[in-house]
View: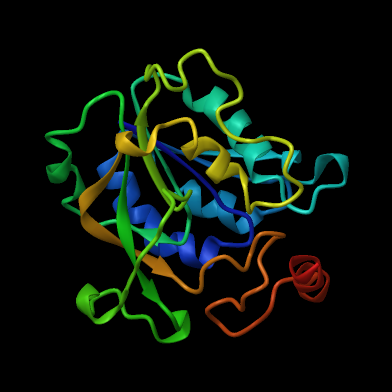
Length: 225
């Protein structure tokens, strides 16, 4: 079972999520920008983590084309077997694979997520139950588990929407490949570090150390528009 994530300006959060992810999955591909040195260095600490650098996020005037970058990442990862797409600000429980005994091809799987509202005070040792569960209606891209040979996607390319100028719709495009009756909630939760739905044009939220990403004002204005 392999996994893939996108990480651009998220290395401070990936540092929390990559350790359990590298232990859970056989291979993890991290798709990042050409310039993101911190993410590249973080990936290099793990033998089964591959860092893939691309300019796909910004091609054709896009602010953050996550879908196009992910599609390149899928080609590197290999489109076979079980694949988990997850966001780099998602922490998975160490025993997660124990819950996969009943999964089968033909379904799209995802757990609910608990929201860590203030990442500056986050303690990975604290009980997850203190964080509230976000009642997602969609099977959003923070976690999507599927089999690559599933008839819903087997003969379809691209899997993710590649024409979005930002990161806010390509994962919805992907989950629409499955009928609602074939989308299943897994019996555990994951932790989401920070707010949801606000970094579509690139990161705008502050880093854990309190500093802000470059172009934060431009990205916030783009999100409002």
